Amino acid sequence: MGFGYGAGAYQQVRSHGGVESADPHGLITLLMDGALERLVKARAHMMRGETGPKGETISRCIEIIGGLRDSLDRKADPSLVDRLDSLYEYMSRRLLQANLRDDAGIIDEVSRLLQQVRDSWVAIAPAQAGRAVGA
Image (cartoon, rainbow, N blue to C red; front, side, top):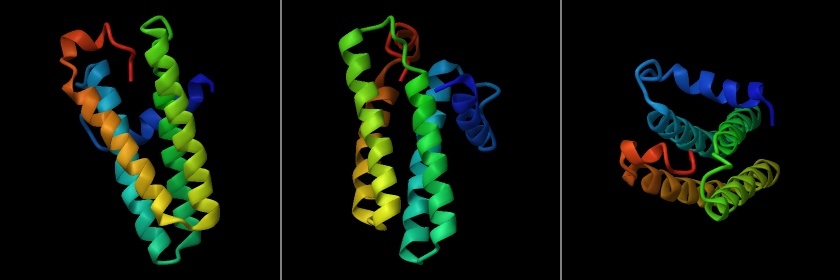
């Protein structure tokens, strides 16, 4: 995943405001919030049978998750970074399956997983975030 991949996710979240004044910890939180918001929208599109918007919204969510993967600090705790990377990769695969199968249960699963990661991330004090894994 290249720079453009994560930059696209950043740009999507930028429209929600707060990016200009956010620290790196806050930016990761904004990315997670953006992905969670899109998961809600994707589920709604799915329930209404709106195939095109559902696919676009899921694709944007996968891009944001890619941005979260790109933000991982590979120099930090390697074991934790590897687990988070694997979890993000799993979420992306599951979202592809949700899109192909029209399975709202998978979107719910990814939402729960991402919400747990977000809750843990938010619990880290910003002063400690620089020493953490980056997402």
